[in-house]
Each structure stands twice: as structure tokens, then as C-alpha cells.
Amino acid sequence: MKTIAITIDDSTLERLERVAPKRRGQRRNRSALIRRAVQEYIARLERQTQEERELAIYRRHYRMLNRQAAALIREQAKL
Image (cartoon, rainbow, N blue to C red; front, side):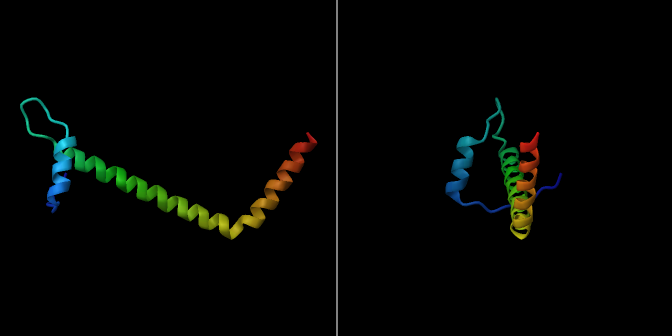
């Protein structure tokens, strides 16, 4: 694990202090909270990127996909 330095404004730090879990007799674990927040943010960005890629594929091929879906529905209706 690497140690990094970040700059954070006072109001954000105060909010962080309010929500960071406090262990008995120990300091608040701000690092763990910040790590978790960064991990969740990165995961959200990755999901968004994947969704954008899938949407671009759909936009390029929507006519073909619609034809295939209609054909599949017709086939299933015969059963």
C-alpha cells in the first residue's frame, strides 16, 4: 500500500470528520473512509464507461437488433 498526500478544503474535512468511524480510544480512520470512497467512485466511472460503450454499440446496430428481436418473437409465437 502506498501513502499519498492530498489537499482537502476545510468544509470537506469537517464533513469527513463527522462521518469517519471512530475506534475506541483511537483516532478516526479517515484513510479507510477515503479509500472506500475512491474505490466506489472508480467503480461507478468504470460502470458508466461500460454503459456508454454498450449504448454506442446499440446505436450502431439498433436496426439489425430490432429485426432479430422481431424475428425471435415471431418464432416464439409459433410455438
